[in-house]
Image (cartoon, rainbow, N blue to C red; front, side, top):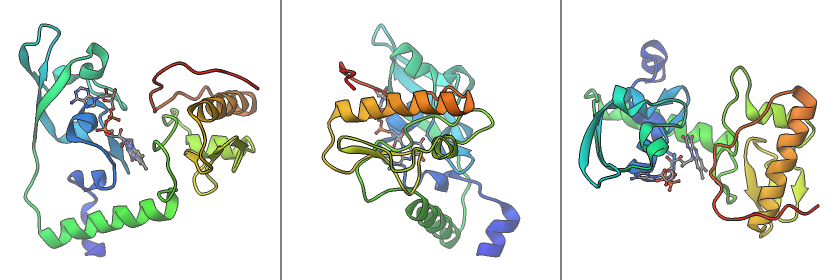
Length: 198
Ligand SMILES: Cc1cc2nc3c(=O)[nH]c(=O)nc-3n(C[C@H](O)[C@H](O)[C@H](O)COP(=O)(O)OP(=O)(O)OC[C@H]3O[C@@H](n4cnc5c(N)ncnc54)[C@H](O)[C@@H]3O)c2cc1C
């Protein structure tokens, strides 16, 4: 099966196995991993618009881009989505899902609480590498730290507060910019008010 996958490449939405969340969140965020994105398999999405009317948006009307969509921009509510998928051998699908899960377990701090990748992948760079190059591997503020396993993840490993996490994020942004000139952008969303104390 490994040889077959190597020859045919990874097609289908197996890449999404291991991305926690709901279909709505995945569609709205255009969730993706390992070079796959949900947008490549979505035919249409039904939303409740600002007038609470049900509207069907085609793939191009959804204006998908990296972790973004029209639904997110306009504040609509996604209620249904139609995917276009090809029938495939079940053993091959299982194989691909196991392969993606193995890669995640090896490279991501899945045993610690996190919100996933903290920052978007900057064009031409990897956020984790930029953070590691800025000397921040394992860097800690209060109960939150930069994962030793994957610097792109802020983990809450010692009962950190939202404020610890926020201050750590701000520190990472500053140090990475000083070190590489790259402005990291958040992939996670902040909710509520945060205090910046140092
Ligand atoms: C360990 C870990 C690994 C992760 N790995 C990945 C990864 O590889 N790739 C990736 O893309 N993400 C990853 N994530 C992030 C997250 O799992 C995805 O973004 C996921 O798609 C979010 O789905 P959710 O249902 O939890 O949405 P939420 O996080 O609850 O919501 C995300 C946004 O969508 C909005 N929203 C949710 N549902 C709807 C709806 N029905 N209609 C309108 N708006 C809605 C919310 O208001 C919010 O703005 C990871 C997270 C963790 C913790």
